[in-house]
Image (cartoon, rainbow, N blue to C red; front, side):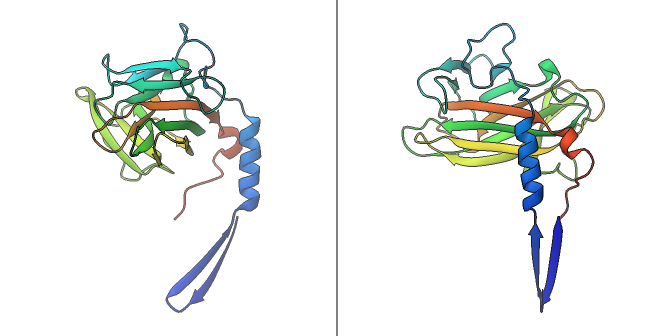
Length: 225
């Protein structure tokens, strides 16, 4: 990475040349294995299914061939009555983040509106010994909030991407960054929900992936202003 600065009065022009780094990152990501089970919903749910709905028994999550981003199937969360209800993938069931590291999380999503649109969000939820949002958010995180699990135990969710979605097209949600656990880990997952309140459209997801990039990034890259 090369940074050029040119002082023009009060203005500072910063040109960051990242093309070579981007190409290395992209080619390395493509070479890594997707860690998820049934990421495109083309297989029926079995005993090892990790997909579920956030929101309790009232919210349903199922495979559907009604529409898909690719292939013939996608996943649909329906009967949503809160903005945080939506599709969820249980990453901790297979210990996919291990002891932490650098990961890429990606999913296609759609808010199935008859009309209008919603802001769909990608969140990483972690239940460890961290009970409040950190003073400095992890690289790439846009916001954080923590909620009670079993008091005094709390989990924290990090919003890492969002996009406007309606019933006409799929959007891509993606985050690449570091995972660092604090103390004992209870669970962790990624989920998709909406920012706005009612109405609460069904949420569809497809073509999800989680890729371990720790061997690519290691400790060589740090977030800078």
